Every structure is written in C-alpha cells, then in structure tokens.
Length: 153
Length: 127
Ligand code: HEM
Ligand code: HEM
Image 1: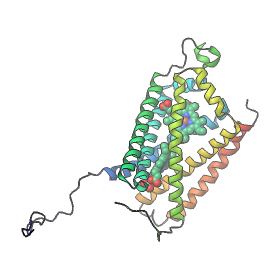
Image 2 (image 1 turned 60 degrees about the vertical axis):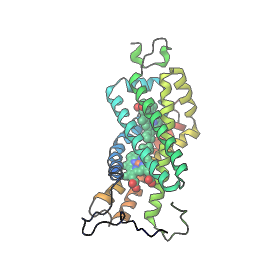
Image 3 (image 1 turned 180 degrees about the vertical axis):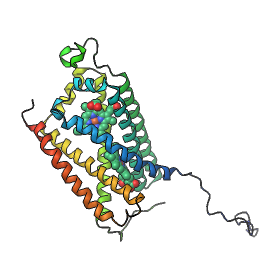
Image 4 (image 1 turned 30 degrees about the vertical axis):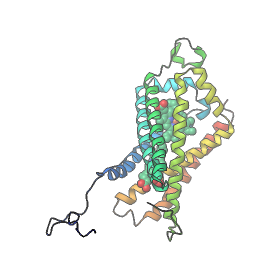
C-alpha cells in the first residue's frame, strides 16, 4: 500500500543549519526582564504608599474620604498611584499567568483561568485609572464634615 | 501533554523554600490588590459609602490582617531584589544563600520598625 515515500519532511542535503523555527518571538524573555525591572520600581512605590498611609500620623485609623481627598488633590500622588496601579497589575498578572501555566494541565482549564485573569486585569486597571482622574475631593452636595478642610476654607 | 509531577528528586533547601514563599506571597498580594482597587473606587460613589466600608476595616482583626499583608509584601520585595541580584550580578548565584539570610535580616528589622507603630495605631488610643 503506502509504498510512496514522502521526502518533504527531510531537508535537502547541505541546506543551512537552522536550529528551530521561532514561532513565539521573545515574549517570555521580555516578560522575565520586566518582572525584575518592575519589581525594583515597585519597592519604592509600594513602600512609599505603605509608609505614608500606615506610619505617618495616626496610620490606618486616620484613613477616610477626607484623607484620600487630601492626597489626590495633588498631581504628585495621582501620578504615584497611577504608576503603582499599572506596574503592580502588569507585574502581578504576569506572575499569576506563570503560575497558571505551571499548574493547570488541561488546555481548556488553562484557557479559562487565563481568560478570567485577563478580564480581572482589564476591569481593575480601567476602573482604577478612571477613579484617579475623575475623583472630586469636594463633591457639591456632600456633608462638609466628611471632606478635606480645604473644601470649606 | 504535561503530566502530573510524581515523586521528584528536587529537594532544594533554602532555594526551594524561598521560591515557595515568593510564589505564595505574590498571589496573596495580587488578590489583595484586586479587592483594594475595588473598595478604593467607592470614593467615586460618595464620601459616606467610602467611609462606611473603610470603617468596617478599622477593627483589631483587620489590623492584624494588614500586619500580615505588610509582612508578605516586605518579604516578597526583599526576596525579589535577591532574585534579580542572583540573575544579574556576576557573583549573585554564589551568594544566593547568604543573600537569603540578608533578606531575612532586613525583614526582621523592617517589621520591628513597622509593627509597634502599626499596632499602636490599631489598638492604641488614636480614636
Ligand atoms: C494595609 C495596607 C494599605 C492601605 C491602608 C492602603 C490604603 C490606600 C488608600 C487610602 C488609597 C487611596 C489613595 C491613596 O491614599 O494614595 C490607596 C490606593 C491605592 N493603593 Fe493602597 N493601601 C495599602 C496597601 C497597598 C498595597 C500593598 C498596594 C500594592 C500592591 C496598594 C496599591 C494601591 C493602588 C494601586 C492604589 C490606587 C487605586 C486606584 O487607582 O483607584 N495598596 N490605598
Ligand atoms: C514590592 C516590590 C516587588 C518586587 C521587588 C517583586 C519582585 C518579583 C520578582 C523578581 C519576581 C520574579 C520571580 C521569578 O521570575 O522567579 C516576582 C514574581 C511575582 N510577583 Fe513580585 N515583586 C514585587 C511586588 C509584587 C506585587 C505588588 C505583586 C502583586 C500584585 C507581585 C506578585 C508577583 C507574582 C504573582 C509573582 C509570580 C511568582 C512565581 O512565578 O512564582 N509582586 N516578583
């Protein structure tokens, strides 16, 4: 029956040596570098965030709407939080992606988990970004007692 | 098809445990961050809504939870720097074990600076 042999799979003699076809680009390499670079920057951003919110003044017990109003009326903290949001979400999502790849063995399980992961990423990054830029520290009809002191001054 | 990892000969000592701890803390912080951005978003609903939810966090139990979260992030951060040094510093691999003890030392010092003040804010007079 199958006597005709296919020669297509065998490379012609003395054709140039090619190790393998790269089909995925260098994505994993860049992601590996990114984890390390973003980590170094995140140390500064997250430690700064924790110090200002937990150590200065009365720490956690002082956090309320007026506290956030005070911080986000300054472009400095807006940019700080925006950078922290984006870097931490890219870093964390990429890390969890690695973990899913390690443990989820069936293609379908892996697909579903990664789908959920990317959905969560998109929702949190979009929502967090909008919140920073649409925030109003002194909303019009709010109880002045709850606002930062500069709203009434 | 990858198959289930059966009995393995990999019994890395410090290297393996620091890897496990790095992984566990990373996932923990990630899930915290998802919730954290959602509850911070309440500032766009109303001052009352934000204060109400943050108020339910300002309890001794949550205060201890925050201490745990900070511990997780402090370890993950210092150990993350160690990982980068192992990978990029020529002598990193040789000193990876020494550096783990440096990480543990820095962790203890940082937490010793953080915990008393945080616990005072949580349990102490404050409000
Ligand atoms: C118990 C510890 C923490 C407390 C009490 C806390 C508190 C707060 C508060 C009050 C805000 C409002 C804005 C501001 O103050 O800058 C905020 C925003 C934010 N925090 Fe935290 N935080 C904590 C831990 C963390 C950690 C560990 C991370 C990073 C992984 C983080 C990431 C963020 C981000 C990205 C925002 C901006 C959210 C947005 O864009 O809507 N926080 N946090
Ligand atoms: C504070 C500064 C941080 C530093 C220095 C840091 C450093 C690192 C490094 C170097 C890796 C790569 C490990 C590897 O490739 O083997 C990593 C992994 C990871 N990080 Fe971070 N990170 C930081 C903050 C965060 C934050 C805020 C999150 C969560 C939002 C996070 C979640 C993760 C996760 C889930 C992994 C994957 C762990 C694994 O594959 O085993 N990290 N981190």
